[in-house]
Length: 268
Image (cartoon, rainbow, N blue to C red; front, side, top):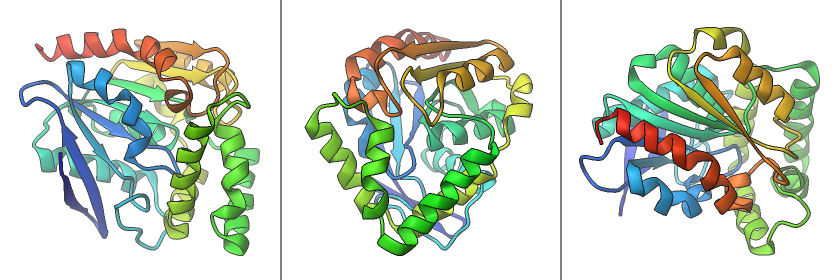
């Protein structure tokens, strides 16, 4: 397993490919303030059916952090650059939060590149309280660095009963995120405007929502599912914004059947 670098615009994206050649591709996108390691617990499951492409979103992990603001058009272009680099004409897509929102953009703008999608704990619109919340976090990190938002972010990501080791791994990812990258992506989130376009989504979508998630509440994701043709919604009880990290088994139960169908549609 090795890292490769993909150039997309002014960004250098750190990409990792795992799995057997010949299996269908699965492109996996991380959340804001994390890196590709947030999917570590899912890799045995994902590799059963797919060859997996992970990368650190621009401004995160081992990818570069160009000056922002970023946009979803930019983040979608990064996805296309990664697919092009590995030679994947078509891939299934799984993304969480920012990664899920970017996946929606890819499905809307480049449906011919997408098989099936899994969109976890994401939203598709930007109501005023959502926009204001990002202004507050941007101001906080300007004054106190990433440490200023770490505890609040962890409180949104996980329930109080979450394993301490999981929380600590997440804390390290948050603190390692460059302020430029966080702010650049936060500005993109403030411009999020895909809800009106969801009725035209062509790829099938599985939406996955943590029942306790306040950032992408299940009623918001239910409305997204209702607006999206050929979609399903899975709600995970007792979990919040990063259910894949807090309870990998529950998350696997929600996505495994969809992954199997996705692989079969590629002829696997």
